[in-house]
Image 1 (cartoon, rainbow, N blue to C red):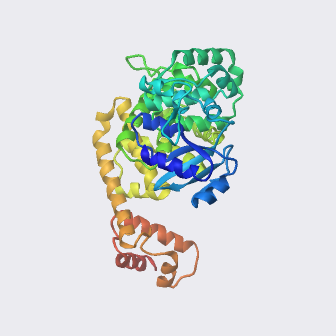
Image 2: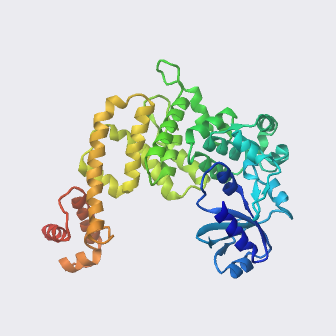
Image 3: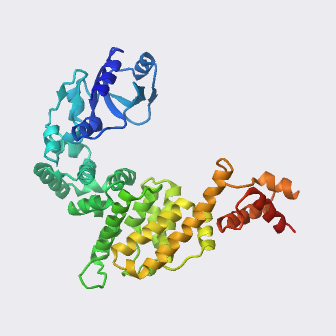
Length: 430
């Protein structure tokens, strides 16, 4: 804590009062070391503070401009007070556990009992929760996100007020723009997707943002036990959640979204009946949620490829998949296939094929990584210009075809050095 207080004192030397706030205080109260500290600053001119500190840049994007920099070796972000006092600022924060401030002398400002709620592992909407929910109904999703991530219970009054609001104001929820739903849903599923969607289901929120997912609860899987396809989505998200804790995946967003959307368009447990228009529906949803186009492509690639991974795949085929979609997407698709198989109870049936495919994919990826190691970070042994010079050919489609063929030769182990690459190219050039 002392290092963070030193940062506050350094900011206050510019003439502006400052407090530790939000996630920083909440994490410190929970015994977690924050990587970046969040400050509230009583100042009108962030640019002047940055100038006085001699560090940081002002990010004016969004409703609340932020000064971001590094002081005493600690990364920080500073926001101007929302209101005339720190109490006014805290009153506008969504949850009591985020509405705590620490002064530079170590004194604590906690008008809503946030520290008490942290100790008792309770999520409570700040202050007059009815007014806060009415001002922005998506505070409900933020409440559920924190409850899921921090594994806390929701305070009884917040729960009662939220349920009553939803009962009386369905029109308000239906009028929320899709991109705002998307932004909050992506935050909600980032770490605890199964728990977050279960909470959304408990509060009957799913029909507001994804009716087709809600409809799956009415489709039985046809197996003993009486599960619905919605139950299978939750089981799959649960497996994904556990894998995210143990596997460092580069594309968590695509991984989780594939779990959320994979059964859209299915009517039976056999996912081979998934209709082609389902891809259009997934694309439509994710586009409205402002998900980047490359992530949407990755999600669709995972959904449409993973079932094929239950059969033996050759190194050549894996190489083609990697070159078409990227190494990360294929790795995630394989992890996704394992999650679905485990969640739906047929992992033993396909374990040998999945283990064999994992081995084959790792061999392909190892060969591509070796290129980078041998070429100081380049993705290929030879560039397009080097191909043209070596073979004395002009720019054109043929150069691209040769590079693609060379990539396949590398991925399948036929070429493992620059010399071998040159030799392979000469053998192809007739």
